[in-house]
Amino acid sequence: MPAEPSTQGRTNELWGSDWPEVRDLWPLEPTVAHLNHGSYGAVPTPVLEEQQSWRDRMEANPTRFFNRELDDALAEARAAVAAFLGAPDGSMAFVPNATTGVNTVLASLRLEADDEVVLTDHSYGAVQIAVDRWTADVGAQLVVAPVDLDADDDSVRDSVLAKVGPRTRLVVLEQVTSPTARRLPLVALVPTLRERDVPVLIDGAHAPGMLDVDVAAIGADFWVGNLHKWCCAPRGTALLYAEQRWRDRTRPLVASWGEPLGFPRAFDDSGTQDPTAWLAAPRALRVLDRLDLDRVRRHNVELAVLGQREVAGALGLDPAVLPRDPAVSMQLVPLPAGIASTREEATALQARLGTDASVEVAVTDWRGQGFVRVSAHVYNAPADYARLAAELPSFL
Ligand SMILES: Cc1ncc(COP(=O)(O)O)c(C=O)c1O
Image (cartoon, rainbow, N blue to C red; front, side, top):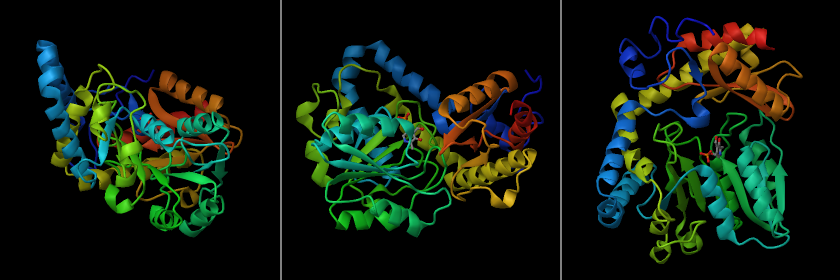
């Protein structure tokens, strides 16, 4: 294991002279290069402390907390988060994660035999698995629209619309794709699909905190997004938006006491669980606000591109031809042919980089091509990517 901390020198010229204090907000191991924010996020200490103070309150008197305090506290947290995401109060429910949100939507549709659900081939693996299950159970079909990595907005639109037909009951579109780190052109697609009366679910798992999200303006039937990725909220914090006409039939996957309260409050009570992640989420938004969210976004995109160039350079790739979406704080470095070309190989390489080089980074596979996907958040510095660049060639 390398002896030097990845934040060696403790400088980040892209952020500025106050970076060491910013880095210290996160309790992340200093000896590791944490380049995989996109998968699991990372929670700053003030947010963990806020969550702990809710836990302390819960443990001091569980009956008072659950019976007499929780409803109001959740309503307040939900309103704060909905305002941040540009959604009217009452239009969003807390769910534990984007995967639960997607499954909830699929359940609400009450699919029938021969119905079709359309995804692109950039969809997240677990979302494909969910669509597979909910369609296969009733004899419906999962339909995949292939979209090239460098496809422009018109071609993405054409590829998706080519798969939409009279049996289409849902189109799922990512705001930012997971294996390929690019935005899909929602503006080019959502209004057209709505005009054709085809319901749309936006998978915004990566969007909150990374992009300026205005859920109401997107105009989709459903939207789901994680706060535990780029907003740095405690894990288990996601939001499901349902447009007015869907709210009556959008119900939690687990029926419980909340059932008669309808959307969104029914989602607050799916049996006894720890709600402190949801309650601490507004604190995460305040931390980002204090750091200046615009500055955070600019920094993250710039650093992700810098990191991509550095790692690509180490593999002898031409920086001019790398796949790149300039608004996304994750960037791809293509690996040589035959490396990480399957999910198993990608997972194995990712584990070896973490264990043997102390570099935690996502390795993705897409259409048989392996990629390293570097993430950037404000706790990262150029030295993190330099370490990956130095280590990666010897792992291939
Ligand atoms: C595009 C996309 N959708 C859904 C998910 C699932 O998120 P979660 O594991 O929080 O449910 C992810 C996770 O990385 C994702 O990237």
